[in-house]
Image (cartoon, rainbow, N blue to C red):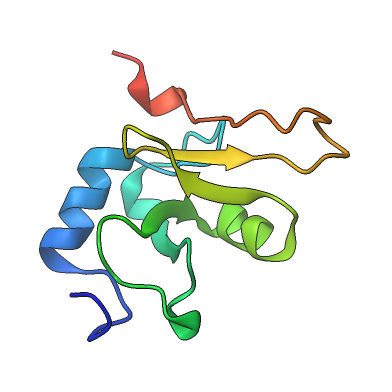
Length: 103
């Protein structure tokens, strides 16, 4: 899809659901149907609509990420990780949502 479309739908949405399994913010238990795709590198700023840019977030954490100091990125394995602000964690160690990985 790249730059042609801003919204995530169809096969890309299904791929995000398989990867993130729900809200990717650490500790959140919201299922995929309650989540929207958040562009890590905003579409308006040139970010693409591809599997390497969006992450699933529930409405609460989507607003939290937009107004907060958390950094969102994809780790080396392609899964989302969230770097907390220095006031919360001086070492700024990346965090992941492990809730959806439970079997």
